[in-house]
Image (cartoon, rainbow, N blue to C red; front, side, top):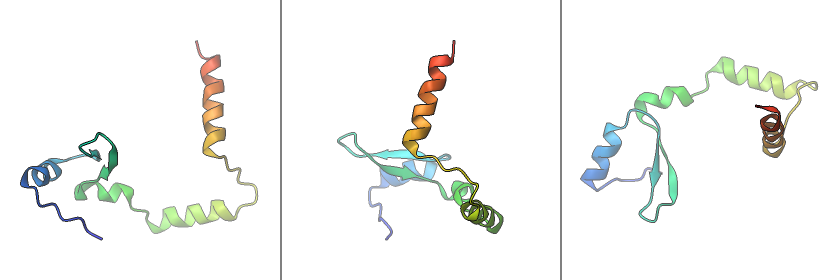
Length: 82
């Protein structure tokens, strides 16, 4: 559902955005991210990307990691870095 922006100042800030920007409420809490229409194509999946993803999902040899496993591995690598 679209969110109507009635505040002209806020609408101008959104219109001036050239990159994805966080949208923060008056209490400082992150509400979401605004993606300018000109950048929306960066977030669209074409048929080739979808087919590649489906191939990976169907491949029994594909290894998947949870976010926690990835973060643990990054912590391990940080310990080894000078």
